[in-house]
Length: 219
Picture 1: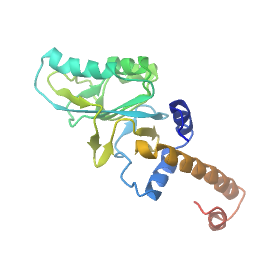
Picture 2: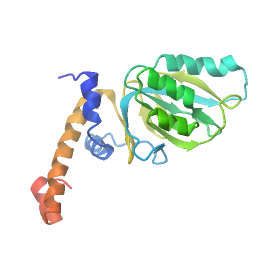
Picture 3: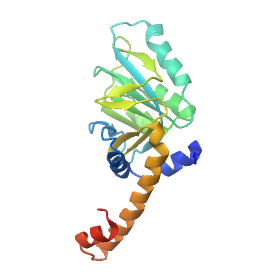
Picture 4: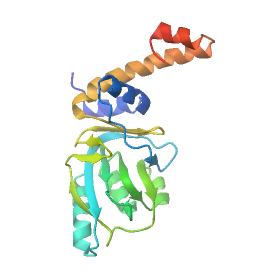
C-alpha cells in the first residue's frame, strides 16, 4: 500500500529518530544517522520531509551571478515537504541565511539540514523554519563558497542522501531513510513506539525492567 506523501509525513512526525534508527539497524542499514555535531537552532527543532540534496565548495570569486544564480535556482525548485540538505564541504561562512530560509518556507519546504554554517539565526527562529547545522557565523558566501550541484546524491561522513529520501531530525539528531524503505521503516518504527509505551508504563508501575523486557521483547 503506497501512502500519500501527506500521510507519510504526518506519521513520521509522530515517531522519533531513536526508533527509526533501531529499525534501520534491524534492516542492516547501519550508516543512516548523520554526525552528532549537527544540532537544531532551537531545542525543540524537529524536521521531517523529503531530501533535496545540495553540494558546494569553497571559492574566491566575488562575481554575484556565479554565487547567487545557482542558489536561487535551487531555492526556486523547492517543493512542499522538501528538506534542503547541504553538504557544504566548507567551514568558512554561512551556507544558509534569512532570505534562503524565507524562500524555503514560502515554497512549502519543511526545513533545512546544513552540514556547514547558518546566519541570521534570530530571524530564522522567528520564521519558524526548523534548521539543523554545525555552527553559526555572520560571514557571507560571496568570495567564500558556491553551490555546485543539487538534486543529486550527496555524501555526509559516509551517509548517502539521495533525492526524495526521508529526513527526520529531532533533539537526538538527524537520520536519513532511503526512499525505497520509507514505508517499511515507518510501520516498524510505529510498532516500536507502541511497544515502548507499554514498557514505559509497566516500569513506571514498578515492574522489574528485566521482567518488562521479557514480557514485551524490547527495552
